[in-house]
Amino acid sequence: GAGVSQTPSNKVTEKGKYVELRCDPISGHTALYWYRQSLGQGPEFLIYFQGTGAADDSGLPNDRFFAVRPEGSVSTLKIQRTERGDSAVYLCASSLAGGATDTQYFGPGTRLTVL
Amino acid sequence: ELKVEQNPLFLSMQEGKNYTIYCNYSTTSDRLYWYRQDPGKSLESLFVLLSNGAVKQEGRLMASLDTKARLSTLHITAAVHDLSATYFCAVDRRTGKSTFGDGTTLTVKP
Image 1 (tube, rainbow over the protein chains, first blue to last red):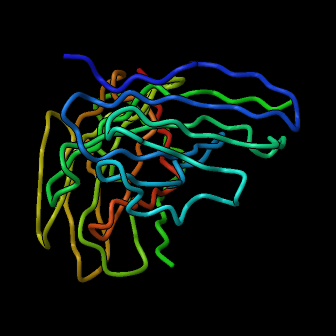
Image 2 (spheres, rainbow over the protein chains, first blue to last red):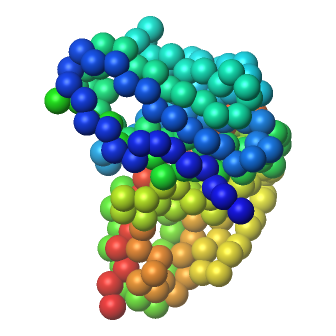
């Protein structure tokens, strides 16, 4: 079956621009996670959705970052007024229900480069 | 604040040898994960460890968890080139928020 997909795979933008990154989770997975991974580091948690609601958004670095999941499936991570420090690979993962033995399945990521 | 430390960060080993990667975490956690990441690729889940003393094995990899010591190990037996990758451990507290270590980059040489 299809895994987690993310679009675009690469995004190059200029400082100050707005970007949207999309994540399509595995069908039927209610939990969805966004992470950011900088070169040479482990993924850094951004936000976790359970269904349509953000169960934990404590990892969003500031109010330029926002994420939505209006129908409980596809999610969009939105970054306003991008800065060079936002450059990273943005990873999305989904899991069946966020339960005790849940496995997170990761997408291929979107590489964001802010010039 | 939950912190996760892995060591070593870089590991070069010969085929056929055994080695262990260590993952320490700073506060009580409910779940510990091990992932593999190949260069330019996303993360692949290897193991989920839920309780003290848990041990899981898949092929040449074996993971264990000691919650009292806040330590997990990933043991590699008779390494082969195909195991070359970066391995991450991550912990969470059933909140959905996983905290990752910085990874151990393993290179297996013939």
